[in-house]
Length: 134
Image 1 (tube, rainbow, N blue to C red):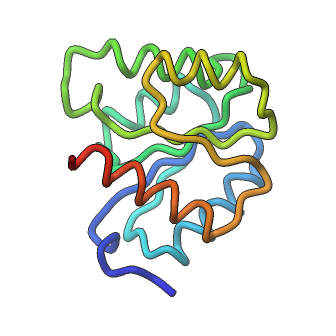
Image 2: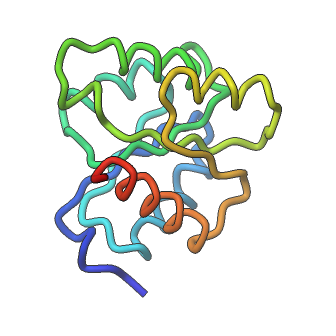
């Protein structure tokens, strides 16, 4: 079921695997996001955030040439608060403690382990929006 709350919002998916981009895009459509953008690595993701000002970013951690942790560090270091404060949820096939710790230290808003479900993705997005509104 789509949520009209998200109809006016833009989401950005950053992943270097096209099939993951397609799957997550379909999930975000089901959730109800009005606009969904994609990027294939952290650098193009930074450019997409600056251009489209998404409400949320869903990002893979392990990509080349710029990985998700570097993307998040660059994002959080931005001088523009509308870029710097963008919520970021990592999509990862790894639950490795050190990666999660690094991502949290850099300001990640949440994690979803691949393969994601629509329900889990919606829950993490809602948690991210709720925690930033508080």
